[in-house]
Amino acid sequence: MPAIKVSKLKGRVRPLAVDGGQPVRGELLPYGRQTIEEEDLQAVCEALRSPLITTGPRVDSFEKAFARRVGVRQCVAVNSGTAALHCAAHVLGIGPGDEVIVPTLTFAATANVVLYQGARPVFADVDPDQLLIDPTSVESLITPRTRAIFAVDYAGQPCDYPALRQLAERHGLALLADACHAPGARLQGRPVGSLADVTCFSLHPVKHMTTGEGGLITTDREDWAARMRRFRNHGISVDHRDRLKNGSWHYEIRQLGYNYRLTDVQSALGLSQLRRLRQWVKSRRRIAARYDRELRQFDALRPLKVREDVEHAYHLYVVRLDLSRLRVGRGQVFKALRAEGIGVNVHYIPVHLHPLYRRQLGTGPGLCPQAEKAYSEIVTLPVFPSMTPGEQDDVLEALNKVLQAYRR
Image (cartoon, rainbow, N blue to C red; front, side):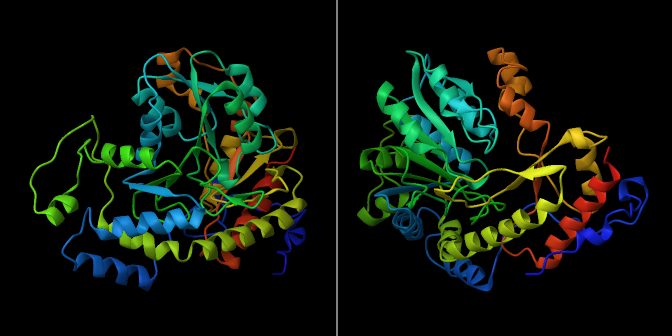
């Protein structure tokens, strides 16, 4: 693919759209977008015409197909990525008095589910180059109350699981993975989903594949999978399909659970989407590779580093601004790019800085300096499988326009 000739624009500063100039795009380009094709629609319509549209056979088929894809024995489907995270925390028996180490640079659900269980999230800092949980920070936070390490595959890059596994085994801890950004990613040839004791995925529309809303949990433990299936269904011993099959009305609630079920209709969509997961991850990598090449022309930003032993899934393409080369902060760059029609985003506000956590746990600035510094500099650029070369041209043109205008 030919490079966009942004060099032709250098030296010619055009009025920014945020200041009343002509925007690069008339319609906002989102940072992520689902892909729904005709075969998806057919799969959903077929499910809607079937006798069971929830807790039916397609849920089981979807779980088995995904388990095979990531090379584990068990997969449990639920109705959101957050529900998946909650199931994982529950099945490990995390509860009051326990601590779980969580990276602060993540979506708040990773830490929220620890609070759901009455336990305390303890926030680890991140590596400055990749923004993944820093094993050195993790080790410094382990106490007699620590029960688990919750790794997050930020942006789609697998964490340093060998280092985290070593820490977990040395201290007798469980290793959980929030892989909501990373279906299709690999570490040293092994698929994400098979690298931790329990791994959680999201099926939100902006992710790699979708069921509208939904989540998946993978594990090799059959007993854990059975407990999570009860947990997603109010703690009931047998589900509706089992009772229908056996001609029975009787069930027992054996534990406190939630309604976290995924429907057959959603599972039909998930099965259809799963067939194209490899193709879509390949498309994301192709778009990311072009960003990698083109962004070398800009000295006021740099992409995150990618380790050589990983295959990145690129849920997000995140860059860090070099604010020493700009007259404005990240907030103004963000605003200007949005005005140009580029739907950039920021992932994430460090969880320990949210009012809930500051109020409830007494956290605040200075706790995780690397994550806090990164937060002031990061911007997420658009990347999704159906993104066209022309749309990526627009992103690069807008970056060039804004960064030139704000140079020191």
